Length: 183
Image 1 (cartoon, rainbow, N blue to C red):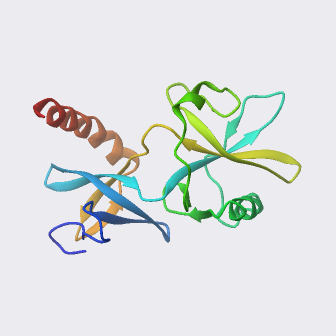
Image 2 (cartoon, helix red, strand yellow):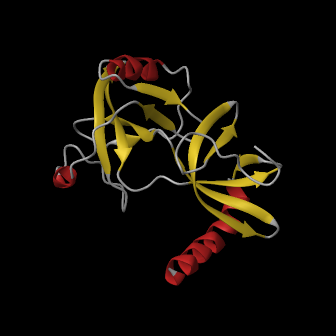
């Protein structure tokens, strides 16, 4: 990446940016670049499909597992199950992702409660279900777009988290709404 901004890579028309976090990387499409307070903030979407790991129990609500160690045995089982479908689980920065050819979700399936995990406003589609350590798990694909916010500093994409995220997120949303209303 150059000091002027994120590098454009790949053969398509959409630039990609590499986000690094704690030794992991996530390749993302650059959706928007927003200048704010002397910094360039990038709104990004992962190139690979983001997924969330969920513990499934018959008698309880599904539990989204927020943080998982990359070496977690559960992920090893998920790897094997995904490989049967020619898919690969990627322990990316920010989120787990799946690479490979996925079928497009069928909008008619969105109301099927067994395949969807509802969490207030987010909807998910079940990608795979598997058993590990005597527990049922599932990898779910969010149906709403999954955005990552990064600050471009010295040509590098730095994940925006914590207080900085809380401070800039409403202003970035306002800027995006303004841009949308101008279109």
